[in-house]
Length: 126
Image 1 (tube, rainbow, N blue to C red):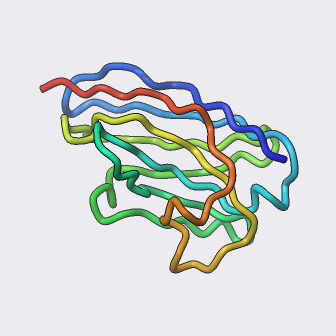
Image 2 (cartoon, rainbow, N blue to C red):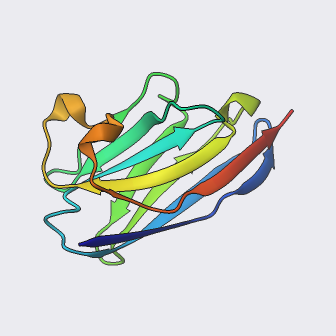
């Protein structure tokens, strides 16, 4: 099993920055790949960034490329999402998620992830 706890959400003005953290505990194989997802009001959950343990390769959605960076601190077993140049369109509930190894082409797909945190709310005002 894997337990995930997000922190760092809050309110920020447009153009500002925010860093989310996700504390990971449990089975490291089952948390081999880690992803960040967001969900604005509505049914769709969007994958925004992912990182897998081997080589630390990161993946970013086009909508956040150049603004969001994900990283993993192995010593602290914590995943981070640094978000810069925020706009009101970035307002959403943000979730971290974990999965065993998955193909690179699927690492931003919510359906590929087995374990989810409770979410952290981010609100960006104009």
